[in-house]
Image 1: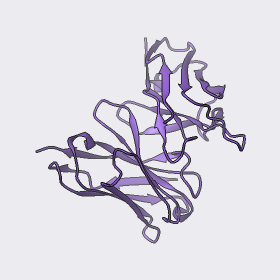
Image 2: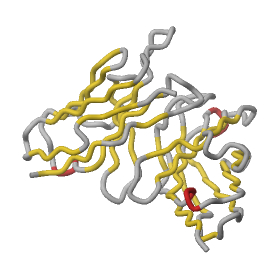
Image 3: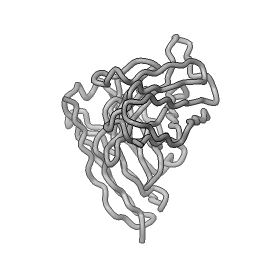
Image 4: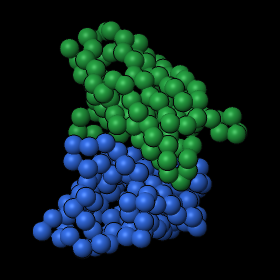
Length: 113
Length: 120
């Protein structure tokens, strides 16, 4: 099974400052069709998760452009250019390369200083 | 607007059974795979099961294989999760989520979740 890890597990950021979360997979998430099956989700306190990024770097419709993501193979990064209060929550990366088994990272908790 | 509304969660005894439902609206239901993802208290996310848009293909996590059954009624725009042999470790919020194609690939939109508690 593909194992997902995230660092850091918690992050405290001042409003307006940037933030970055790393996600690593135990095997490459690049599929033979050229797509990379890595996703990022945000779960705000008391809410359901929501999709932020799909296929490693594509913003889901409606996601603010202060969120960006990059990476390939086994190493990926989610960046927030200027953290706002509404960005507080737990961020999860997830792989769907090894279908039908989806696996999530442990989550990174982001709060405001 | 995509809406997913889960129901059926409750307190159930170990070994018991339960059926969860997820009513969908706002998209062409039969064209898209649907999935269940759960979150144990204070824990992370765990994929549970998925079903293709036609219902012809189903997929399960090892932790629930043989105990849970996913199904769908495309005429009712509803996906179900029939759970048997429930264990304490099945206690969680159960979310349904829709996908972007006929076969499971990602979780684009999520419902608000329904709470299952397995306890005597």
